[in-house]
Structures are given as structure tokens and as C-alpha cells.
Amino acid sequence: MRIDRRQFLAAPAAFAAAERQPVRVGIVGTGGRGTGLLRLLLRMEQVAVPALNDIRKEALARAAGFVTASGRPAPKLYTGEEDYRRLVARDDIDAVIIATPWEWHASMAVAAMRAGKYAGVEVPAAITLDECWELVRVHEETGVPCMMLENWSFLRPNLAVLKMIRAGLFGEIVHCHCAHSHNCLYWYFDPEGNPRWSGLHLARRNADQYPTHSLGPVLSWMDINCGDVFATLTSTATRSLGINHYFRKKFGPDHPAAKREWKQADIVTTVVRTARGNTIVINNDMQLPRPYDNRWMIQGTEGLYDEARSAVYLSGRSPQYEQWEPLAPYQEQYDHIWWRRMREDVPDIGHGGTDYLELKLFVDAVASRSPTPIDVYDSVTMSVIIPLSEQSIAAGSAPVACPDFTRGRWKTRKPVFALEG
Ligand SMILES: NC(=O)c1ccc[n+]([C@@H]2O[C@H](COP(=O)([O-])OP(=O)(O)OC[C@H]3O[C@@H](n4cnc5c(N)ncnc54)[C@H](O)[C@@H]3O)[C@@H](O)[C@H]2O)c1
Image (cartoon, rainbow, N blue to C red; front, side, top):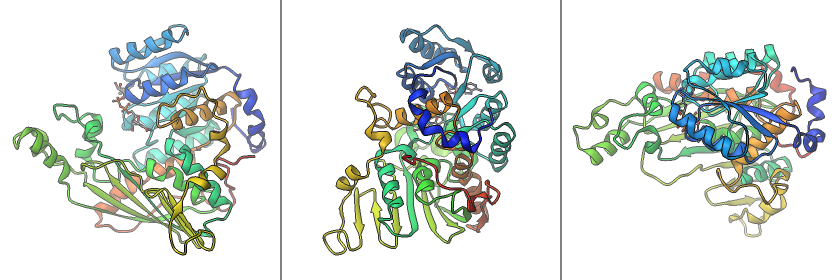
């Protein structure tokens, strides 16, 4: 299954053929996200789903119902906590989608790669530094691809901005801002205020625990791991007030969630400095009441893009001196081919088609035995912000060195993500 560079360069030509190749996918974790991904996969005629695994029988039965309702044979169901090992060992599976709690991701992806199955792992790919290195090591030993399913890398405007960057419209890039500002208390806690598996992480750690949605597009915008690399970071945390405050208001001061000590700060601000000398500000902001926001902003010597305004300013090109102009005409001109060729029958579900596109590209990579659009290096580079931010916060915002997962190859690796061929 080892994929060499020659095969990789042949990948775009293989695309059309790939759409017809059957791809057999097993799913580990059929909760909210896993079921959503399953339903998108079932929209792809080429996809078979021979096996599913979840420790909750009701979640598994519901997911199996979607498979049979689509006209496919009933999948084999696995219910044990370690049954993912049996699922990945099946010889009628080409790829495994992993949508379980964070603490399982790395070991499940490792098991998939060791069994020779493409690993498509939900965000984040890993939550410790050791797990990040393990994913890289196992990928390098087996040659099997591992893709973190970071959907925001595929968002339509983010891909158009990538093309604008590559066309030089912003000049030399020097700085970027990104955030995951999303009130996720509904996801961290059940309706009675008991922490779900995700909420338990908030009691255990103070870190940017969900950095990959912010960083998804930033990696390709800034040529990270293919021209530049994260060098150091510092992280600074606010107090932790939001969770206690919310539950005190909702259930009164004696509710356990109102009294418990949560390690997780309300807002974590990380500043990454790259080897080239560029900077990235990353905000994690997931427990305070607020509308959703990513606040992507990318800035170079010729201008900048501001996602919140859906606007750009380009020196000497924008009609009004130092005034924003809408992104829309540029979006049309620089629209990515992945979006232009999305057929009309593509379901407009899952983040406006973004999740479908991401999964389709993963499935096509499996079908043509080519590398996945997001590779293991980018997957762990986004994920490693979790342990590194935790380390920096614990040391009073001290600078922490970022590991170079490419072991120096970032200097010669060329950008390949989303090239239009
Ligand atoms: N990319 C996105 O936009 C997006 C959106 C939501 C969630 N996610 C990610 O998806 C993952 C799952 O989140 P969710 O919201 O679906 O959570 P969830 O709790 O709804 O689903 C997780 C499922 O994993 C099952 N599970 C737990 N341990 C298991 C084991 N050992 N073997 C098999 N199954 C096991 C649980 O029973 C549950 O059904 C998380 O990593 C989350 O960060 C990503």
C-alpha cells in the first residue's frame, strides 16, 4: 500500500476512474458525527459499508438502519470497546472512518494503518505529543495514509482565498488570525448539566482543546510543512468562569456543574511563530454565550482577507484607498474546481456541502490508492496545539518549541493541497 511520489502525481488523472471504483468503509463511532458522515457516504454509489462499531447498541442499530434503508446489505455490527481491532482486521474493508471520543482517535487510527486500511479520523487526530509522533511513525512504517477529517480546510471561501494567495494577490504572507468561537456547552454537557465525555476533558485540562477548525485553512494558506513550519508558540488563558456561571444561572448554585472546578479557561489565545518569521494567532472560545465565529484573517505585503467582513483589501487594486471591498467577485473568479464541479445532486447538508466534498475526496483517494488531501503531517501539526498550549499555559505562557514532524523535509516539500493540476 506504500504510495510513492510518482503515484501521487498521477492522482488527478485517476480522479474520474476513482469515482467508479467501489470503496468499502467501516465506521468506528456512530454517534452524532459518525452517523452524519455515514449518511453522506451512503449518498456515494461507490461506497459499501460492510461493518460498524459503537459501544452503544442503540446508536449502532440506528446507523445500521440507514445502511439497509439505502438498499445496501446489513452491516456486521461490533459493540465492544476494543472491537475496532476486529473491524480493522476485516479483509472486506479498504478504509476506516473514526468518529469516537478524542482519547480513542490515535490508537484507532494506528490500528487502521497497521491493518493496511486508510484512516479517516475526526478532529483532533491526537491529544498528546506522544500520540502525534506515533501517528507519524506508523504512517511512515506502513505507508498507509492517515487523514484528519478537518472539514474547514475545504470550505468554499477558504479555497478561493488559497488560490488568491497562490496568485500573489496578498503579496508575501506574514500574519494570520483564526478562532474557534463557538458556544459548545450543548455538546460538552447533557441537558441536565452532566458532562459528556467531551465535557470531562474540560475538567482535566487547560489548553486549546479544539484547535483544528481554526487551523484547517491556515496550514495551506501559510505553506506549513511545505515551505515553512511551526517553530515556537506561547499560550495564555483567561479565568474559567463560563461553565460555572451558565449552570448557576440555569440550575442554581448547588448544581454540581455550577460548583465543580473546571480547569479549562474560557478563552485561550495562542501565538505561533513560524521558522520563516510569520505569526498566527489562534483563539479557543467555546464556553461563553456567543454566535459562531471563525475570524479568519490573513495578511501580506499587498493586502488582507477578513472573513468576518467577507471582504478583502488589496493595495493598488481595491478601488477605494484603504477601504474594504467584498470578497464576492473574487470568490467567483477564484472559485476552486472542487466546488465548481460539485454536481447538482450533491446534498447541501453538513456545513453547506463542505463535509460531503471532504469525504468524497477521501473516498476518491482510497479508490485510486493515492495520498489523502490532508496528510498525517498536517493532521498532527494541527492537533499538537493541544498539548503544547497546555504546556505553555502551565508554565505561565512560556514559549514552547513546536516539533517538526517532517524532520526537516518542510524545507523541500512542495505545496500539494488543493492544486488544480
Ligand atoms: N468536523 C466536525 O465538524 C465535527 C463535528 C462534530 C463532532 N466532531 C468530532 O467527531 C467526534 C465524535 O463526536 P460526536 O459529537 O459524534 O460524539 P458522540 O458522543 O455523539 O459520538 C461518539 C460515539 O463514539 C462511541 N464510542 C465511544 N467509545 C467507543 C469505542 N471504544 N469504540 C466504539 N465506539 C465508541 C460512543 O458510544 C458514541 O456513540 C469527536 O472527535 C468530535 O470532535 C467533528
